[in-house]
Length: 85
Image 1 (cartoon, rainbow, N blue to C red):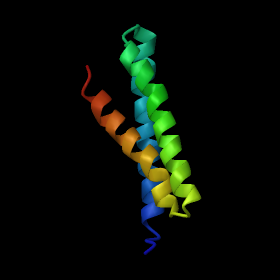
Image 2: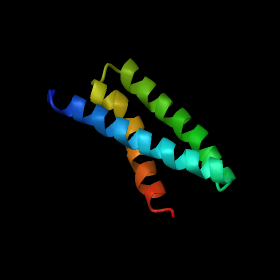
Image 3: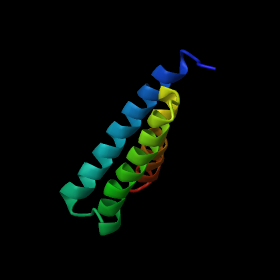
Image 4: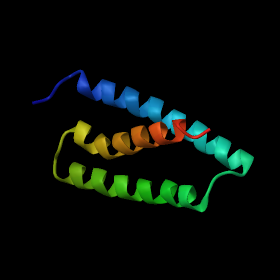
C-alpha cells in the first residue's frame, strides 16, 4: 500500500545523506586521505544501486523501492564517514 508521506521523506533523507557523504568524501580527497578502497566503493556502490533500482523499475515496483538502494547506501556511507575524524 502506498504511503504518501514515505516517498517525500525517503527523498529528503536521501538528499541529506548524499550531501553529507559528498562533503566527507570531498574533504578526504582534498586532504589526500581518500583511500583506494574508498574510491573503489564510490564506483561499485553506484553500479550496484543502479542495477537494483533498474530491476525495481522494470518490475513495476514503487518509487520507494526504486530509490531504496540509493537511500540505504547513502545513509550507511554518511553514518560510516561521520565517524571518521
